[in-house]
Structure formats: structure tokens, C-alpha cells
Image 1 (cartoon, rainbow, N blue to C red):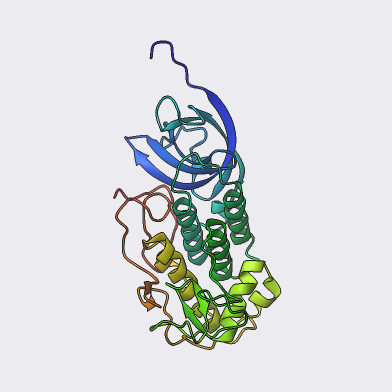
Image 2: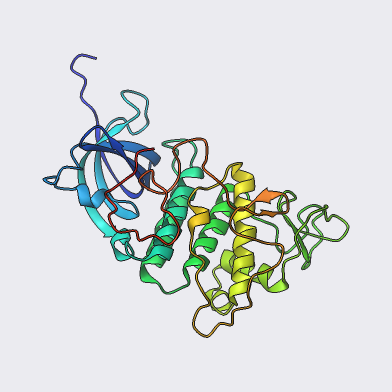
Length: 313
């Protein structure tokens, strides 16, 4: 359109993912406070002379000025980044920490999956994602606990929260021993379907604590309970997403925290590629360009330095 000038607007956002575009540009996937998830082109940010290229790395909280229609009614669906100011670049605090980096990758990928429609505001998910990345950067809680808490609360926002205090089928209140992913959570003996998992009572308690934010209970749990909880949470999430998260199997579950006993692996629940209640817990690549930020998937136990070297898919 002759004489058309793109509208300028500002918003703060979390950088979820970056992709190469041409020789010197990038497409940045953002989760914004007021405009939901959107993609924008950052021109020239891969040049060494770029003024704000380092601020547009994954996991950063930034304030941006964007050019384009905020509602997406006119012009290109890709907006342009014209100005960036870093508020808190969380990623730089754990670039050399494999467990925290992979957990942040899973958080960013989950945030993108939970916002399938671009420019649909999701303030609570934005705040949840920002809080999870801040918690990872501070390192006050175990990495896997922060990740599982984020996944559980994200599913609650999406309406997929697993039933933990009542039967997911008939609604009978109480603590039930069986857990079925297809059924929606804990199930009573009368409603238990074939193939349901039987987690330890401490595992259900941990899931409840992570959902409600009771970190005193969560921090005191044993490693085996945390692994079983991670398996159930991952299975429940990917069942509802109807696809596997590429970054989730790469998360380093690590060893037991200081002062907590290691109870070893838990029978019946695995985190990488096994099935729990009929749903895959970890999986292979998805059928699109999702995955770890930057369009790359890091191999297990490999250092994460050199965030600028994205692999072209």
C-alpha cells in the first residue's frame, strides 16, 4: 500500500526461541505481557556490530519497541524489532550449567506450545514463565522441581490440571493410589483403567506441593520421588499436547540434593521414552520446527557454551 507506515508499539517479553534468517538476521519468538506470543524479525543482530543482538538471546526478559500492527489485522505477520532494552537476561547466569539450561529450554518450548494462537494475550502464562526462569537463575530450588512446578501450573492455566485430591472419573474425594494419564489423574479402585500407574503416596503429595507452591515439602523429597513425579507430569502434559516435547528428554535429572536420600529409580515410571499409563513420557522429534531455543537440540551431557551457534534444521 502506497504511503503505508508500520505502527510502533512497546511491550516487555520473554525470548522463547531464535532462528536464523538470511545471512545476518534472526526471527525471534517472544511471549509478551500484553500481546501474547508473536514472532518478530531482528535485522542485523548476527553481525558483530549489532547494538542489541546480545539482548535477544533465549530466556531473556526484555523491553522492546516493535513495528507492525499489534492486532495483526494489516501488514506482515512478522513484526520488526526496532529497539531492545534488557530488563534481566536470565540466560547468561546458567549458560555453562547443563541441567538449568535444558530445564529452561523445556520451559520455553512448553510456553510456546501452550500459546498456539499468536497475539492472544496470556498474562498469567507470561508471569508464570518469567517467574520460572527467574527461579532457575537464582538456583534456590532443585532444577527439576522448578520445571515440574512450571509444567503443573501451566497445565492448570490450560485447563489440564491432573486430579490429585479426588478421582478424575467419578469425583470421589480422597487419596487414590492409581494414576491414569488418559483418565486425567488419580483414579479410585472402581474407575481404575488397565495399565494405570501406581505411584508412591509421596509422589502425589509432591505434585500437590508443586502445584500449590509448598516448597518446604517439595525441597524435602527424595530423588526417587522426584523422578517418579517428573515422569507422571511429563506424560500428562504430552498426552494433552498430543506431541512430544523435544527438549524434555534432554533435561538432566542429576543426583540427590544435599541432605536428601537417593531412593533409586522407581519401577513403572521412566522419563525418557518410556510409557506411563499409555502416554509417552519422552519422545523423538516433533513434526515441526519446535524444540530447544534457537531451533537446536543439545545432545545429553554436552556443554552449552556458544549460544550463537544455532543448527539449521
